[in-house]
Image (tube, rainbow, N blue to C red; front, side, top):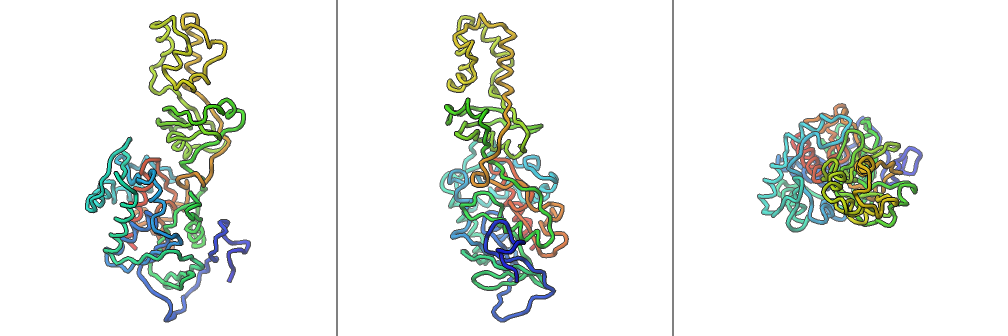
Amino acid sequence: MAVADSPEASATGKSFLLLFFKKEVLSSPSVETTDVLILGAGAAGLMCALTAGQRGRRVVVLDHARQPGEKILISGGGRCNFTNLHTAPDRFFSQNPAFCRSALARYTPTDFLELVARHAIPWHEKTLGQLFCDGSARAIVAMLLAECAAGGVQIRLQQHITDVTRGDLFHVETDAGSITAESLVLATGGLSIPKLGATGLSHEIATRFGLPLTAIRPALVPLTLPPADLAPLQSLAGVSAEIIARCGRVAFREGMVITHRGLSGPAILQISSAWRETTPIDIDLLPSASPGFLAAHKRARPKTSLRTAFADALPQRLADAFLPKQHEASRMADIPDRTLAGLETSLRQWRLHPAGTEGYAKAEVTLGGIDTRALDQRTMQARDVPGLFVIGEAVDVTGWLGGYNFQWAWASGFSAGQAA
């Protein structure tokens, strides 16, 4: 049997063995059997588990983490942005944008809010339809665990997968023993936030069962800038502003923060999902200013300085960084309208060519994953591998910032839980 340090082993370097497809799994009195075996005790895995368990299925969940729902616990600054009221298929990135429609229609934000209400968890809407717990994200994890308990689900932590095979049943070897199951659900997520133990396990298992993988990359992640673009911003680290960030036909209006390495903030995290190397991003620093605002300022207050006019529309430090040196002390009345129009355009069309991203360590999600063409959109089951399901972040469905990825986890987990 080949092991993980062989040339064919996963690039993640984790200690699980290669998969082998066997015609049959030898029976053994020491091998446990269950109906549904779920790998991953995160948002999607727990939702799948409670749904299947409450259908009367025997369910076991395995995870190598010390506690379930670790990503839930750190989300939303510890308050868990658990869904978004504006959830719709067009708020998700995928090579097959229509794939997520079925699951999102079968389990909606209203459905999750009903679950939250049954557990008396107080919540509030922050902005743009984003819903957060009033208290701790632990309330969401406790709710999911209570629902799992109601369905008789067994959750086993700190267990590491060492082998997965398939005959009449799926057979999973762990460092704590063997278990077979009629249905195997891959819910271990993607590569984002490796400090929580993220690995490519779901990708690895799925591809060895013949499911194709789309290109993957960090998403909802800060962007880094090359030295030429970064140098003028070095003294502005920490400065924030509301902007519109554009990449191709995709645009987001939210906050931006200048960092020591580049740009961050909600608008930048959002646009990072659309950005690709060599592609520029355009930033409108004046989303709230009316067209021709500098010319209007000149007519209304001709004796004021250009610096004052800039500061009326931008944070002072940012305004000073974009203020042309030759006009630092110029009165508005002394600057031609054509010059003012050009300055306004430069603020509305600030073009940058990012050098890269901050990587999976700072990424909230993984863009791409298991190709949706290999999955049934109603059940999340592999078309050519009966009993194999893939859900959550492991699938090539990536939501916008603001609770969309949790709603995908709930919806895809529910769909698989209804079918497994």
